[in-house]
Amino acid sequence: MSFEVEPVNRSSLSSQIADQLQEAILDGTLKADDRLPTEDELSKRYQVSRPTIREALKRLAAKNLVRSKRGPTGGTFVTKPSVAQLSDSLTSAATMLVSLKEVDLDEINAARLELESTCCRLAAQHRSESQLSALIHELEVQTDERITAEDFCASDVRFHRIIADASGNRMLAFVMYAVIEALQPVANMIAYRFRERTVIIDHHRRLLEAIQQQDADLACGILKEQIEYLAARHQDAQDWRAGKAD
Amino acid sequence: MSFEVEPVNRSSLSSQIADQLQEAILDGTLKADDRLPTEDELSKRYQVSRPTIREALKRLAAKNLVRSKRGPTGGTFVTKPSVAQLSDSLTSAATMLVSLKEVDLDEINAARLELESTCCRLAAQHRSESQLSALIHELEVQTDERITAEDFCASDVRFHRIIADASGNRMLAFVMYAVIEALQPVANMIAYRFRERTVIIDHHRRLLEAIQQQDADLACGILKEQIEYLAARHQDAQDWRAGKAD
DNA sequence: TAATTTATATTTGTAAGACAAATTAACTTA
DNA sequence: TAAGTTAATTTGTCTTACAAATATAAATTA
Image (tube, rainbow over all chains, first blue to last red):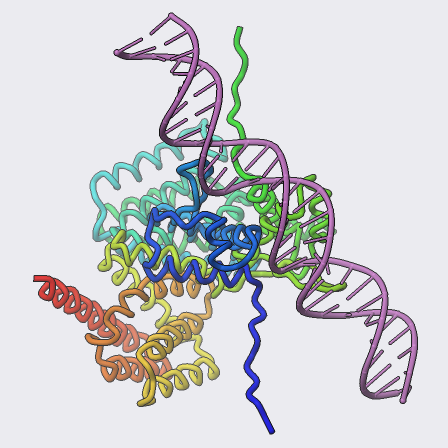
């Protein structure tokens, strides 16, 4: 005599309910700006307590799938996806990879080189006059003697973002933004002591000229120089830190 | 007589606590596998009720930053989200944007071609025997006559993810996963009627061979063929749909 | 009558207390 | 010593109550 044994479901109630609601959102059953049933209604429908529903909703809120509001016209609403939010999520996830040391610096630098080379190549093809003006403007900002290190870093980021924008492909630009942001902690670390602004500015000037002249190969070569320079500076910073710890 | 007015903090307690704990995880104060204080301890420390703590922890759990376990050696432990988990967290946002046509499909396809060409080139250099075996295995799965359309799509995704992994760069793999996932609604849409499996399988076989032989240019050419094929199939699906609506 | 203030109803946010479920270590029994 | 039982701990769920925020309707004032 035998009977079948099936795996039992060990997931918590709140995670099961969150998964179901997520599926309803992703498969289009629940649409952007739709109002979910109230917490009380959901707890009746699922035959669970209200705190369990709230826990499930917090799981969805953490993924930006829903937002809540109090009051007679309040409730829990499916969030409308936006391009800005996707960009933020991508950036936040990339930053986490770095913070949690899931990826090492060589990997990020290599990825940056690949991605930004692609952006440079496309930028050399697609750049507009206003993007060139914007690059020129940032170069002027960077050469100003009064600029603080902080503002120099900010201008550096903007310079590279303009290049990403000039690729003419928004998805690529988002990906590029994410990688640039993920590198910010490192950039901040070497900003004060280990990075010669004049070298960076020179790279930027030559990069701008190459893009202006639509010379993709030259642009990629200059970019490679800059990324290698920055990687070496960072290695110096690490060595200096290691030496200091002795 | 005047006094300063500062913005008041409108965030809920549970989201503030989740943010603080997330920061502690990301800045390295809390490391992977560290055990957080018990729910009771956290509620005493933060001077809030235990359900509020639980809601905060559910927010972190949804981001794969913690996991919980019952029992005397249980508790809430810090986890390190994997590249796959982090990119999965982008899936919902990206998927919805593509479904709602908030982003231009041509842009995503163009970005995919650039990114995946880079991954193919690196995969041709860096692929391991086990990655080749995994690709071979997926090809076998795909050629099985009994496979459902759903399972074929899943295998297709895995095939491309293996290529991203074979690039040997986790940051690149991360962004590649995100782009692949964003295209899933489109792939699902054309899966049943507009996509010849034999064509896809042929592309995959040739891609595998090119990577095996470490011929990066050939791999990139085949990939271009596949992406163009899929874009055309999708255009056919849209046309067919437009015609059907008349 | 128009503008302002107050009251009411609704929904989410938080708290307190109780009990259940899962798990591990310690203890007991064979 | 191995197997079984028990106790303790922590998370998971439930019940009940009240607070906070909000929008609308009603009441009051000018």
